[in-house]
View 1 (cartoon, rainbow, N blue to C red):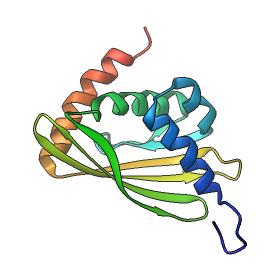
View 2: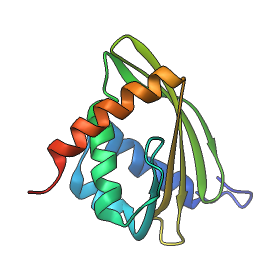
View 3: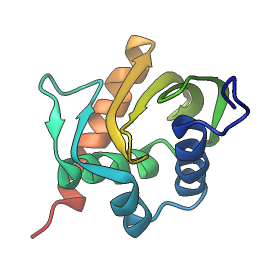
View 4: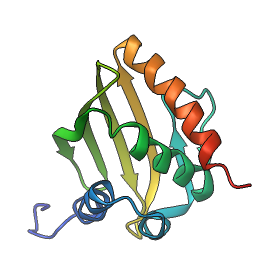
Length: 140
């Protein structure tokens, strides 16, 4: 809540985001992503613009990051329109530690989504698995 006791745009957005993380849904993502959303992948040089690409990457990430150990957020820092969410999971015996940095627009839709990963071995593992997943998820 902000200083006036009202729920912030980010807090409302996080409720919707956490519901999607618990039960990934393309329809729910469609409702949450802004028309001009920009997705920043930790393994792709250029930003991915628009809801079609953002949804493709996020749906792929949901599958890849499920891992052997359940994906979970371990820390959240929330502002008026921004949130930083630290997560952990394990893939192929590699501990993956990362951060989702999310910004919502005035309408409460995700306008910017940036993912950062560590350590290097985790980045390499996620990159290889995401490449395979994105190929599978691409529209025909």
